[in-house]
Image (cartoon, rainbow, N blue to C red):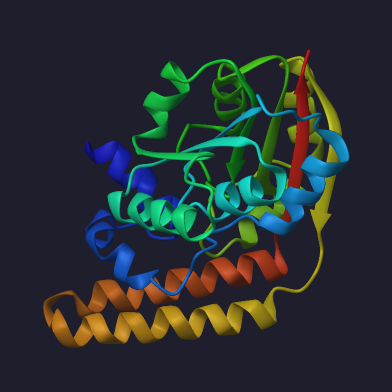
Length: 260
């Protein structure tokens, strides 16, 4: 894993320090879902995406496979999940077996920057709450398009700011596009927007529970690795800052787009 990939990986999981990467599986061991809601994505599939037994879905930066496994179970279609952390992929494989969908789910350790060059002809690609690991938002959408068929679908879970001034208020997150800038990008790339679900629900209840998990695991690591105490403390602060951004300055959104 080269240094640039490490930086993007750390950023996607709420850190600006690559030294945290070996500790991420421990810090995030209490989570299965690492971003997108499988329930919301399931509704989108059922309402808008035609499916049959040959339908193939690519789940990029799939984390621990929560979306792929749960949708495969409900929809009986094929998923391929890709993530760069072997521990996450091992967990996803165990969950696929637990849910009885090992025949529908294939999981592979790979950098998604390679995946977008090699994976082709999918009916749908999912890119859920991953950040900028593929580049700018325009670069990301363009690369994702190369993995799907004509008239295939992109399901993207990300966020936007109400205006550019809001970017100055962000505590952790990098600058985000506005809603109009996202839409302009989709139009320029020839994508048809089928649905956009904006999330305005408060995240405070979920945030407190999840912060307690992360803080507890970070405290464990501080005991075992006192030389990295300040790094773990900064990671907890970054996590809190991200939750604050989602609560105060960012609007989460899931877009379903179709390639014309």
